Image (cartoon, rainbow, N blue to C red):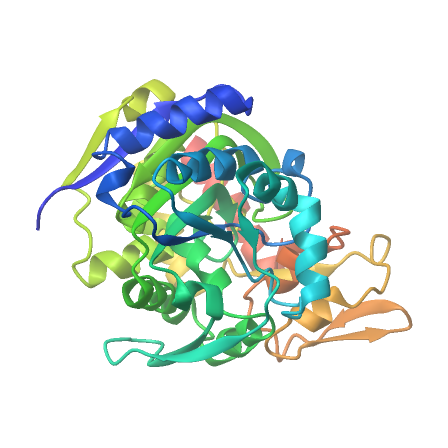
Length: 393
């Protein structure tokens, strides 16, 4: 396997001039934009627009990064479309798209570029004989109609996959509520990770650009906290870009489920990634907070790591969503996003049926009121205390 190249360029702010320069340098390190698109191509820019959130919340790709990539394409006379299908409880309708695009700053970005924003709601069935989890799936029309797709992701933690970045971002091409159907069929982390790899391998984005100027740590992808990373990453392999991002936050890449799935197929060799531009060590953040679902065993003594590995395999440290009745307003977004149908609104509060919950954390991800908390059971909390005493003793 030839080495996979990933560029890292320092970028200390979202000022448009700074982002323009960093994005240009990151792509130039890979041979220049002309290597990935041709003059006059119809290019789809696929940002991460999980929900309608202001750029300052660090939930979505910052519009300055989208503008910077678009400007490089305009120099080639490309026709640019910005498109995404936001989170799992949002219907794929013009009204829903318009609200998300506006809140995330994509309408302003499109005006700056003279680009199109997709308000169409068409999708088509895509076949993939080589898929492991997905032999077929629905994808939004703009992705299928483009000559080239450029993914512009956001570096964030993710409760189900560890990190969400380049590879996971492609899930946004699955239209609206169809995402719930995919989650409902693929109820284990391994099967869902394979589905993400299937989408990337079938749709083959030409280029990956990652917004890591400000990342999200903690319980992402929506309820974490902004964290300065001061970096723009770029590459052609989504798995290599994600692996370098994981190293920037001192997280074992193979613990990211999508990277592990790609490595299992021989699509990435972690020892065969060439980093150009800045070094990982020069921009690494050692105190980055991992999601609670992955924090146990991420660092510490050999004994702690061994014990934590056994606990993880045994399922004793399972983390379950719990409703905060004080914060819950009964809006129903959690129920709408739940692929297992395990949540109902009872007396204006969300109620979770434990026997049906598949622990995908979609409810936590899509709750804009942060009313879904994540907790370990009594056994898991007791084990944590034992591990803490063992590792400090």
